View 1 (cartoon, rainbow, N blue to C red):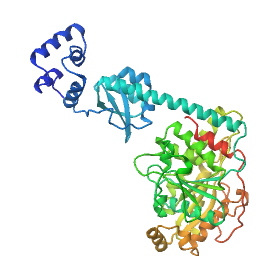
View 2 (view 1 turned 90 degrees about the vertical axis):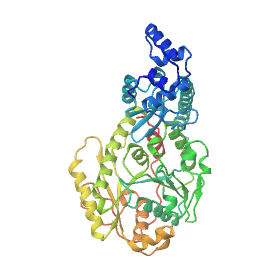
View 3 (view 1 turned 30 degrees about the vertical axis):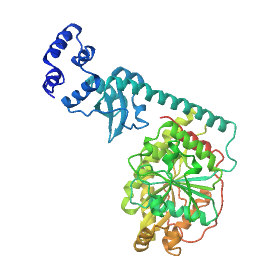
View 4 (view 1 turned 180 degrees about the vertical axis):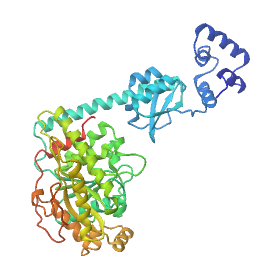
Length: 480
């Protein structure tokens, strides 16, 4: 890297001494970088120069015509900067943005690109011609996508304003947790089974695009996944799987992709597709990926009810999930009030807790009481918005039978319907169908909690508020 470009090219036999002398003489006249002078004099072509620079600087060369690009990477660098610095964003990777550049040593370019994208830049080398052609193609595609997105958004908004939303709306439950290992997906699967056993048409959607495992839990390998819908390769009816357990299922994706990576037009595609099918179901369950990033919280907050799963061992993570959800709730409702005509903000965030893997009835109540008391202390007076949490109940940890269902890859309540854990799950499902004010375990913030009763409860069918689908649409298509 310490060798000057001319000497490096000479040492590697790319140019002759005479050619180097001619280029250096010309460089004194035009005051341009030696690489540009060599190109102007046609002493070397762009690709050979790019290869030479890659070797000299120890920076990888990238072929833009064979390298796959992340669909949303182009959104991180505006077109005017791409043209200014002759660069093309390729992909994000662990907090870095890989960018193909003509001059990877341009410190001004690296600084501005990093500031704009809010990511560290990993420069790669490519030819000027390939970069300029890629800019034309990639940003044309982006502009087309945005135009299509605006058209979709206009159609969706028109349908809402004209009241062309389904007369019957599904009740949507979002199941979240701050970390893996707390039984979130097990609970999602078993709740879907419980609702289906009540003769409710139920859809379970694995909205985890990085570590989807609903299918693994019940021995289902869907032929198509949610990513096929988002990438416009399949329609929503083509990615649905009917299960032997009575509920329908849409699989997520396992790999490096995440919910945060989906672009705006993909969100709109999901919204439009969900509007089409929601009228066919009474209950929809979102099994969201573990974690509390904004993309996960947005999907959760768009649902009718948010269900937070935690365990006695993960009480801090459960509280962090509650706290992050409340802050995001306030942010979303404030922005919707400002941006959406006639929108009436929700003022109360009322997530429900399920305490999983408890060793005793008392433990579930005590864990919830501690979370409730801590929240009451820190969010006692928060202005316009209020936090009111509820306790749906606990699920005891039956180690041996849970291990058996893991091996069998079948829902727990189907394998061991009379075990206490199965009864608790069915009770929670019954509670979710009641209006919150009639639930056995609905507890306002700050009031001492008690464990949910184990046993049958009235299977009351209730409809969500008429505006619930509109709110779902407005949240998911917001631009922050």
